[in-house]
Image (cartoon, rainbow, N blue to C red; front, side, top):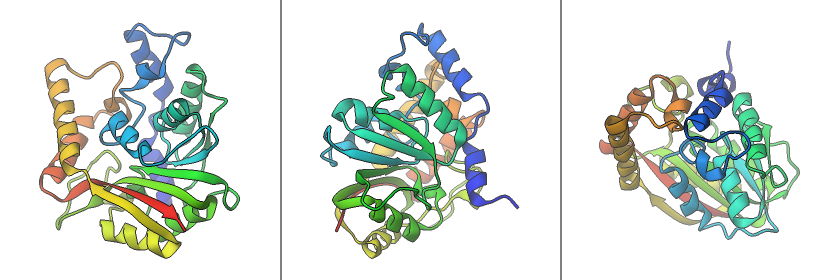
Length: 276
């Protein structure tokens, strides 16, 4: 029987993702010798709001060049590269999906950030790092694939230094009712572990965190998806976009996600926490 972890990794696996990205870059007039982080912006941050949401999270983290950040569920590395490039910190990105880790490593080499950013295939529930190894940690649209929020938060608490900050930006259950699948993070309910904000809060408090700030970003999310759908309806998919990561059923996933947001069933929620 396939484990949840293998099912999640399979959901995100593309098969020829790096080739698809290079094809998109070629269509934009770029090649391996002249790729910039800005060229990758359309595809490399697989969460609602993309770069804007990542920058909003970073504003709360007080990042600096002397720090080390753990990016849990780092995907193809866009957020990790942004943190490193903007703030000069070192970043370790971890992800369940081997293909994502391979592509993240390759793209990081292309844009010249390999000395600051590394990626590993790691299960977020079994962090292979020593106690108090990191100054900061982020979880950007990852918890929806992790069933045990208590174990997740306890593990992050262990590897963070005292007073270290942990930023969560996850889709959470905010209303009664069932969402329709597929959605970007899961094809079926079998690998979707949506929880209410209060579940996250309790797991964080039990692990030894204090919650510094919290905000739901439902309206921000609706506007983001409405803009995405409008652009795709007007001019079709861009050479590089999240549709490549989501596959052929990207329009269905986006429609189901937007329906859940508009019905008030789900919303992305940002939580900034401090390790006590």
